[in-house]
Length: 132
Ligand SMILES: NC(=O)c1ccc[n+]([C@@H]2O[C@H](COP(=O)([O-])OP(=O)(O)OC[C@H]3O[C@@H](n4cnc5c(N)ncnc54)[C@H](OP(=O)(O)O)[C@@H]3O)[C@@H](O)[C@H]2O)c1
Image (cartoon, rainbow, N blue to C red; front, side):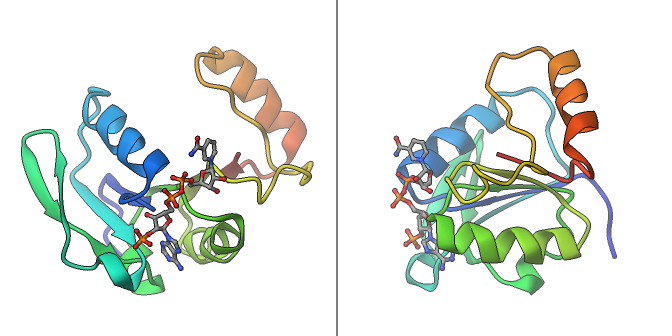
């Protein structure tokens, strides 16, 4: 499996996903590869990522396989399923839905909270392979 620095955004065609893609493109840590994923309905749609134009692919075990970091900007039921799929490939998962709100093993991350607070929350939260 290619463990190069691969990033996947699931729900890239949605309201949150588009904002996320824009912010990630400007974040200053360019990945080796970016995959923009959504449902079957959006396959082939083109979206910008920085200076590039990327084609949207369907989110499947196959398209998530190489990702090291996966953002889920999907409905909660979809997030529940795809978080498991991404974690099976040992990706770190960040979910924007309510799917894991009541799961105490999943740390909550608030934007702009310093990294030390996140690290402390991960210690309390167990495996820390998923955040919400
Ligand atoms: N909007 C907000 O202000 C806001 C704020 C905080 C949190 N949230 C949460 O963030 C999540 C996304 O919200 P949103 O407003 O961005 O929703 P949205 O605009 O409806 O976008 C949903 C995204 O999920 C994708 N999707 C749906 N079913 C899928 C499936 N089976 N497999 C793969 N992708 C699938 C859609 O792809 P297609 O385009 O192909 O259908 C679309 O890209 C939700 O859980 C929401 O509760 C939203």
